[in-house]
Image (tube, rainbow, N blue to C red; front, top):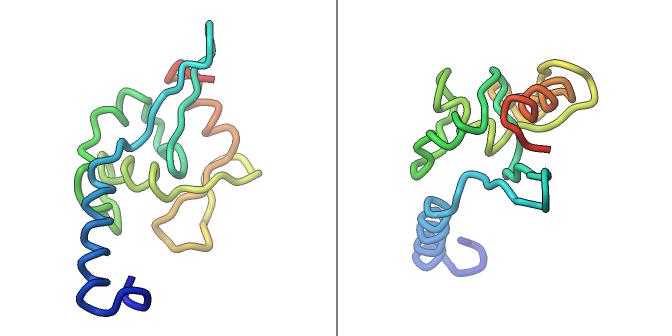
Length: 117
């Protein structure tokens, strides 16, 4: 924003963009026909076994907590930044010490707990 619009207008555009993101949903469930529901989120699933219901209860109309504290902050952070990995379990992430990488086993468990495909 700063390079494109200059300092004053760039900071204003950045603030508007952040405000816009505070009004977007954290994720959604798409009904894809009889018995088929898909969970759509910016990044990944929570690292500690939370369900879709836990995500629905997150207060996400705020700054993304960094670093995240355990609980709601961590769920919010993972939905925004976590990345899938091929290996099972949780792993380190090249984007930083607080960003989780999650394996197919974690995805499968979330899907089963949440009733999505």
